[in-house]
Length: 270
Image 1 (cartoon, rainbow, N blue to C red):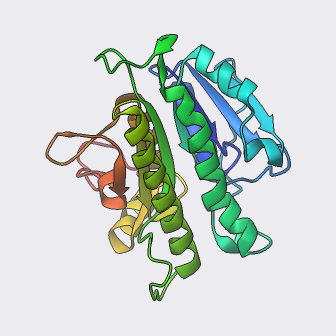
Image 2: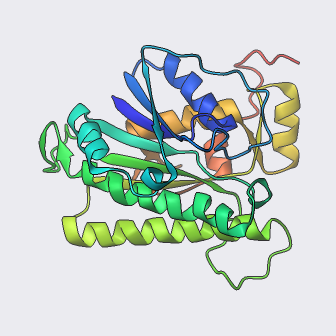
């Protein structure tokens, strides 16, 4: 399976890239970044993560600001031809990491919607022909990294992270509204839209320190985020009742999973 990771130079995007290099179900990844924004990230302040070095499994694609906001048809045609089936969207982050709120809104909301709109054209094709809904055909999955407590009401009064939560809420609203319009025009099936509402993303994996933090506040380790993103991209998402979820919101506790603090099955380094 071939997928896209947008914002692969950032903290979470790079962790996803490293995970993909070990994931045999993902055969190739297109790492898409803005040529003028080397630190696109859900957490631009995290600069100590290991870097995914050049690899035969990775094709890097640098887009100008204009291209990132419109996605050239030639690129869409190429991605369709090779059979890309998912996009993990890691672009965005805290408003304070951007020059102003306009730039933050552009990165968190407008660019995500532009990408979903452009990439949705890929979803109409499967195995080189029009998507028919046959069992063997995979839908195109767009996975947006949102934030815990995302608020879709722009007039809501929030005590913490109000700007970020409202921006992520606006992005969710725009993306799911687009999906509804897309399905009305093309039918349900080809496109699945997911929003992962993540808490504070912690460096590293299942360590004692991370488990303690995850128990104390809404948070999650970056290795778990990377694993779940790859799992959704390849196989979709199954709820607590075991039923497949055709897109929608996935909360931080569900991304963590029921065994997040299970210390009997896994060695936990200090």
